[in-house]
Length: 140
Image (cartoon, rainbow, N blue to C red; front, side):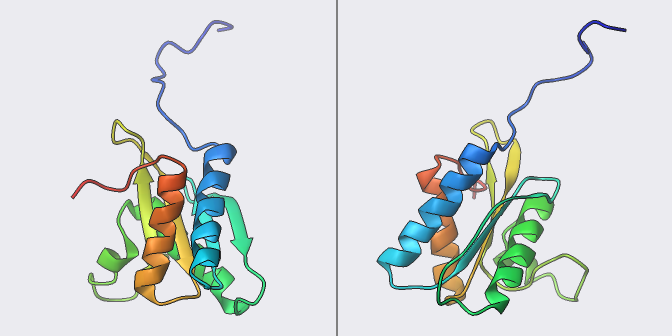
């Protein structure tokens, strides 16, 4: 059994370089718009890959960004959408600001969660980070 695993299929995965580019792109966008946020980038299994908490952002927004990012990554849906599902299921965020992202072939790569601004700005910040890293959101 020392040979290659022929039954395995190669697929795109989130690496640290891409996660850091998403995080840094979001932070750059927030700085440009005079916002103080926290940003969390997760892989599809819900593992935190990259995180930033800007100076001056409230302490609680770090945990909220992680809630949003992990929800978007594992549910493969925006938290703006999961917020309309009703109820309080564990791990499913109900505030806008979590956005999943995908490889060009549609393979889920993870999710980014942003907190500290208005939900619409949190969403824009995450999308700016995704654009900086050349990953795409879910097709409409």
